[in-house]
Structures are given as structure tokens and as C-alpha cells.
Amino acid sequence: MNILILGGGAREHALAWACAQNPACDRLVCAPGNAGTEALAENAALDILDGENVARFCADRGIDFVIVGPEAPLAAGVADVLRAAGVATLGPSAEAARLESSKAFTKEVCDAAGAPTAAWARFEDADAAKAHVRAGGAPVVVKADGLAAGKGVVVAESVAEAEGAVDDLLALGGSVVVEAFLRGEEASLFVLCDGEAAVPVGTAQDHKRAGEGDTGPNTGGMGAYSPAPVCGPEVERRAMDRIVRPVLREMARRGTPFTGVLYAGLMIEDGAPSLVEFNVRFGDPECQALMMRLGAQALDLMLACAEGRLEGERASWADDHAMTVVLAARGYPGGYAKDERIGGLDALPATADQQTFHAGTAREGGMTVSAGGRVLSATGRGATLAEARRRAYALAGAVEWPGGTFRRDIGWRAL
Image (cartoon, rainbow, N blue to C red; front, side, top):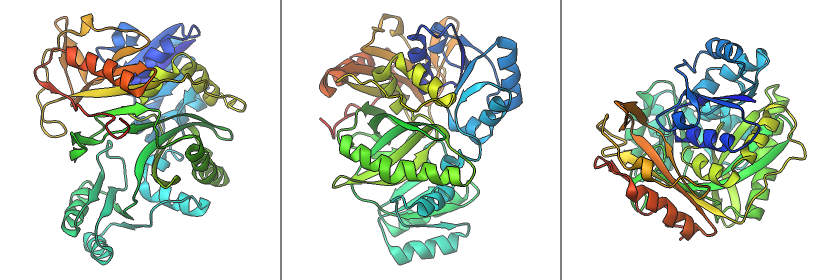
């Protein structure tokens, strides 16, 4: 089978690594990929937001299966074009992808489905939004209604902070959603959906804040671990029964059945999950930890999802744990340097228990250099979370990159 993975981050490197473990994978292409994916796949320069271009590439290269990594191509309708061209594709239609690309749409669907989520209101006018904030008080959550690369959410501790967030997020264009603050502990549940059947494929917890102790600005994610202790079997069952399946039924009722990866961000209080948000693809960095645990079976499950035959499928879990630690350029998520040489990578272990997934990297003059804010994901797997942590941090500490930094407390809630 010839497989194309769209995207160039650590999520896509992890997906490529998992696919490469499966003997059904004959040829692997990543577009655009990065300095890490080129070791196990062909990197291709391809405009992944242009569905017709991607479809022509698939026809020319004999691609059998496309895995869409990031959200932007899904919102742009790339999966629609590929399916119309007869290419098996993991990812929802553009209409179904609104579960991520529009926070207000998600809230409307949840209300119609009876899925528990925070009280909310949508605004295009800053004064009206601020009046709503002042009436409700803080803490309060302000979200950009559209895609914002994981950074369009502000949990405001004061009314003044919330009013500033309203101005900042409205300046991006579109509208904002103001939500009541939910209390509890956050976790993520990942589910493969083929329009009818839904199969859970793992739980995780991530760390969004840049600083240790979960302080500082929000980022795309500084580390994650799987499974999430707070999201045990009973909480997962409740989330599937009260949130995921009702939403899937509502999407089908609307004539836009959801197919692909549904990422349910949950707030869990006293064992009761409420929805924080949906994403319509694997999370980054959660995917890195999930792929280390799933391994080769990930390809079988994703293909069954794309081909509409998930009924009866189940993820086969070992009694294990995984953790990934993000190495980022100093200054991220603000300004940071690029093109810094990264050494020591060739000497790092690359086993079923330790992998270093690349994100913002490139090759220049035969050397790996930094090319983004989040640059590497040092990932470890073990019989316990403590063992997975030890292996992940052993990798992170061995990278020779003076311009890089990483949090040293990933997993602190669980450990």
C-alpha cells in the first residue's frame, strides 16, 4: 500500500513512524515532511491546501491512502476532493470539520445533541462581548471562533484580562465565543469515526502553557502523556455515551456524517466529563504518545475508518504508558531564532520505547537545523509513566541545541 501523510510536524512524523511499522505499508510519502520524516519516507513539496493538486499527486504516484494530519487542509475541503477522486482518506469533510473550525458551530451541535458543555455566547461586536463578560464576571474563557493553531483560547482570571482577549481575538477577524469557566481536570479522548461506528483509540493529557507549573502563555503544546489517569474506563464510557455518540448522531441527522479522528477535549469533575472543545484530527503533541503505544495497528485502524468498516474493530492496548516532551526554540511562542544547528540526533536511541519525532526542522548542508517554534518531541514508552518519563527526558537531555528549551515537569499532575 502506498500512503501519503499531509503535514510537516511531529504529529505527522509519529504517524509516519507508526505506519512504517506495519508490513502493509509499501511506500510512504510525507508532504511536506521535515528532516526527521526523510529517514523513513519520501518528502514531497506539495501545496496541501489545494485539494485538486493533492488528488493529481495521488494519481501520479499511485497513492492508495491519504492521512490528513493538520486541521487547515480539512477545513479547506481537501478530504472532500480526495474522496470524490476515489482515494481512501482519513479526515472529515469541510462541513464536518466545522466541529473544529467554528467554536460556535460546535456549541450549536452540542446544544442540539444534549451534550454537556459550558454555557456560551457568540459575539462580533467587542462592546457587546465585554458587556457580557462584565455581567458574568471572571474567571471566564474567550475563544476565537475560527482556527488559531491551538492559541486562540484565553482563560481569563480577571474581567480586564477577558476584555483584552476580546480585543486581541476579534483583531484576528471573525467572531469570539465567550464561555463559562468549567472546573475540574482536563484530558483528551481520541475516537475514530466512520460516519456510523466510533472506536476510542486512546486518552492523553497535554501541557499547553510555556512555563513549568503550567504557567506562562498558551502554546501549541509543550508535552503530553498517555493514558490520562483522570479519564479511566468509566469516564471514557460516559464521554462516549453522553458526548461523542450524541454528537455523531446529530451530525448524521444534519446530513454531514463525521468520518475521521474526533478529538474530544474534556473537563472532568467528580468523574463527570463535559466538552471543552472538539478537534477533527490527532492532537500534537498527544499523537506522539498515542502512536508510541498503538504502533503498527494504528495503520489498520485508520484504514478501517477511512473505508467505513470500523464496526467490530478495537484498539489493542498493552499495559503501558508513553510521554512526549517538546523541545522548543527559546522565546516560543513569541519571537525566536531559526536555522540553529542541532547536534547529537544521530546518537539518540530509536527503539519501540524511545523515539525523537521532528517538527520544526530542516536540512541545510547535511546538518539538521531549527525551522520553527516547536522543533522536536522526545518520546518515551514504559511499563509505568515514571519509566516513560525517564526515557523521554533522557532523549531530551541528550540533544545538543543551546538555543532549545523544554519543560522539566511534564506529567507532574499524574506523578
